[in-house]
Image 1 (spheres, rainbow, N blue to C red):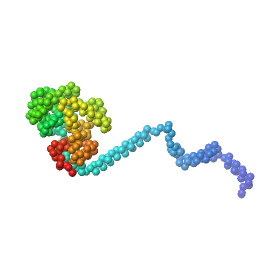
Image 2: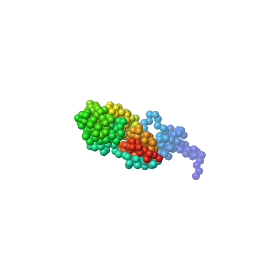
Image 3: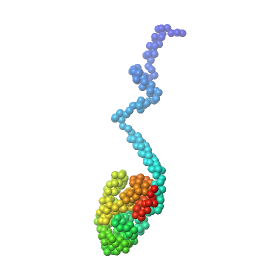
Image 4: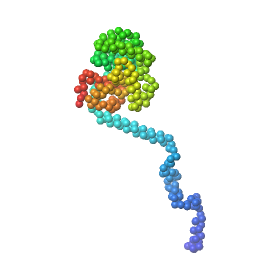
Length: 319
């Protein structure tokens, strides 16, 4: 039965007075609030909060920062691996050349001269590398320099006690036996001064030349700047050894790097010239990647580059 006009008016008034599903009259005053209510019902509570940009005072949870940082580091690591793979893939001719070079001329430095533990940075090993640098950097045949080193090693001069106990005349005699007559007197004197330096400054332990809090910190951090500082400090110490100049310092670092990997990668200036000449480039770090960042391989490569220069075999490796 249709409602009369009076009944319709009464029904409308009742609807206006009736509260709406838990929302008070004050809450439905504006369209903005109604829109907010609709969004809450549609998307759930907190949707609008997520859309708002955080204020300056809003702090981001540390766990979130850690997750973002970890993700960035992972991406960076993947990029580094991709670069290495791409470098090796694009450098196959250079890798083959390095393999041939080391197969024919690469040897581990001082591995065959009679040192008790040639692959460990013991005092005997470090002293032997110092003696090699001193003898090899003189203006003399590399064959004679090696012969002199072998003779000193044969008589136990890798041991500082033996070196300290020797007389000047005994050292001259050993050098002369090896054909090192041109510099026998001066080198015999330098060997005596070396023993005194190690005794007074490094407490009779040659390997301490590579030790100190300042020196170790440079290589622990291992950035390029810190590595440069560490090498600079080592060079300053080696300069104190009479008979060792810039060339001797390069020889020492290039040969000792396989037993003291913190010094790696290193190639002496003359080795770098040969590397560039045969097509390996002059970027030491790039060359290091080509030998899989292996200190032993880097030391062998240094020896091989030195050999083909001294024995005039560079032509074999020219493109």
